[in-house]
Image (cartoon, rainbow, N blue to C red; front, side, top):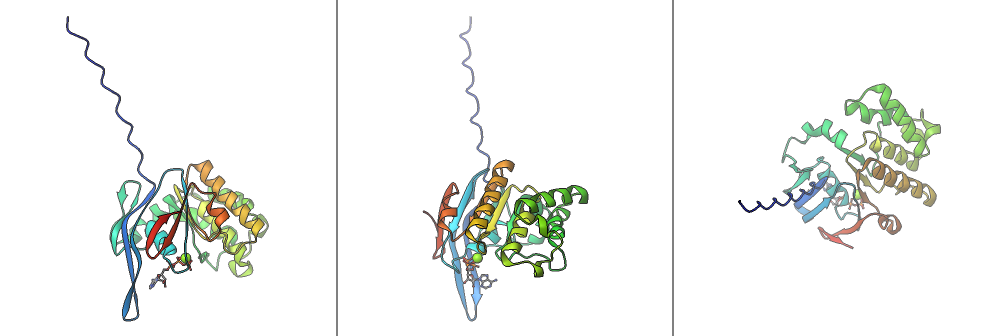
Length: 240
Ligand SMILES: Nc1ncnc2c1ncn2[C@@H]1O[C@H](COP(=O)(O)OP(=O)(O)OP(=O)(O)O)[C@@H](O)[C@H]1O
Ligand SMILES: [Mg+2]
């Protein structure tokens, strides 16, 4: 009789790739006759379901890094990835629809459409991602309620305060249940209590959807609510 063949060990489950990743990212910008080197070899990975915060001085490159991870700007060298896939070095506009589904972005400057009211601005994100208007409107109302803007659905950005616009921008970012939420100082214009509400909304939305959250903030307390904290300074991202 042959000796029993030893059972093969089960394969080691492959770890899922990070939702977003930067590898050796450099970014320079022209500045008059000179160039400024804003990012000098940044590596970071946002794991599925994890949250990460970035602090650092004004002008340190935080928004630039978010834009590169969102595929809105190309690095001068190095690579950004969505899942395991490297983003193209050019032709980023071709990513628009996929970006709308994959990434929810709360821009530092909000970028609400001035001609549209709060409800329409929020619904727009879903329309760009190709979703039906009816489904989109129900979710938009729910999210605007959650951020405390349920009573201002018909107000246009010009009629809203900075903090109110910011909250509409948060609702809009969550519309498509993105894999990654990139929030650039989403509480920058809010009083302490509203800021806490918005942080709760972001963290809960991320938890419920299994989404990852990358938060840029100057607020230490909010930064401490994330799984990992970093500081971006002199072009380098360092753990805190
Ligand atoms: N398109 C651009 N052209 C030229 N310079 C730029 C451009 N975008 C950003 N910069 C410069 O890059 C540097 C980093 O800007 P960035 O907006 O990323 O900083 P930040 O860390 O987000 O700052 P803040 O905390 O004030 O929002 C700044 O000096 C800025 O002037
Ligand atoms: Mg910024």
